[in-house]
Length: 180
Image (cartoon, rainbow, N blue to C red; front, side, top):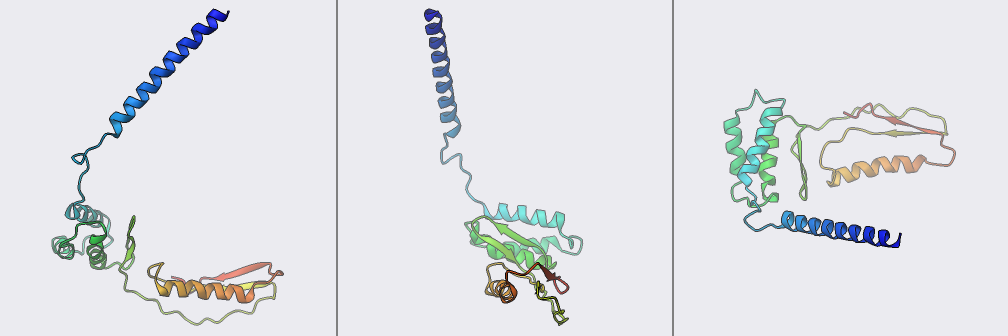
């Protein structure tokens, strides 16, 4: 019995060693990269791909002169070498889409939005609510989430909540009537 156990242990040891060697070899082969393997960032190629997506999916795709569009975007990209350098060109493209809705998010760069519409809100007044029901009015907001305007907008809502919050609150009314 002991001899059988030793043989089994040897077989397992050999198989384990071979498996580890195979895994290491596979890892070394698949992880080997050279500078020749890494494709440099090509701003024009990147922007052509972005414009292609816009052209295929824009709500205004039949109203836009895409040749002129591409020329204007590429002009804004002149001298770009990095992804971040393409931000002005992306902003130009979003402006030229003229839909006031599209945005672009880039890892490491953030969001780009080029909308120009602002909504005027109507003053509908605050309704009278019982003492145990809070009321928060959330008007519309459009813009970058990191702008001072966005921070002020969020702080105003938080202030409404803080001013009414107490242990007896049973629920909240969130008024979105002016929220586009």
